[in-house]
Image: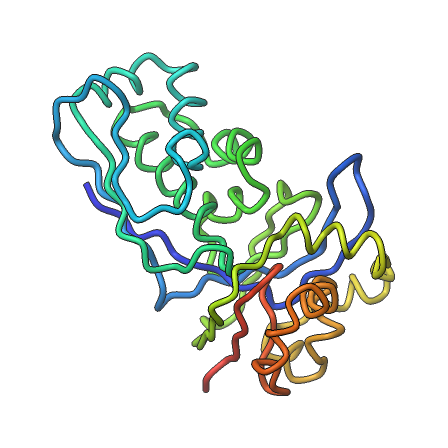
Amino acid sequence: MKEKSYAKVNIFLKIKSSRNEYHEIVSRFVKVNNLYDEIFLKKKECTTFELYGNFSCTLKDNTIYKAYILLKNEFKAVETFFNTHCVKVIKNIPEYSGLGGGSSNVAVFMLMINKVCKLNLSKDELAKRGIRIGADVPFFIYEFNSANVSGIGEIVEEFNEEQLNIEIFTPNVQCSTKKIFELFRKKFYKEVLAKDEEFLLKSKSKDILANFNKEYLNDLYPPALEEYNELEKYSKDNLFFSGSGSTFFRIRN
């Protein structure tokens, strides 16, 4: 079994409020159709869970492994399945780039396991489990091309618009989401105005990008630029910043 695990960009990313150690966001997530990892479930006799791929973290820190533990603790069929199968991931989405590669991998893995192990979970039920692993996971579970995402990532509402042709540029800079949020809280904290939130959520992505600059559209861009000043040379007027970076993007006609 093989599935594609797509990247995403944030057309806008605004901070709405704080919830304990988390931030509530208002954002538009859009799938990048020309950039994806590939996830394989392969036949193999295994005594432990086996995951192969070019990852920068240990197995226990890997989001796919966390999803496996979560599901196998709830469903015996999952543990049984991985006695005779392993997981292989071909990575194409850069890590630490604001493209959601790790979250996408988790979501696709969970969708695959739900199918092959006949767990019969709805996407809502999968998303409730996925949010425990990562804030971006629910978006990828719902498999929308474009969606408004709010809360801490658990509220995902499909946004109907034309499919966008997205071109990305990822500098060789590994942005730490934790550091950027810490700097945001310390020096840049602000909350989106209700009228701005309403306008952004209702507007098409192309119209948003045509009328606003990246400094306004992504609240994490100013702290990212201060933390990683090497991003400055990639900061062209016609490029926009995704998530906590380091990826810039634009829409091609």
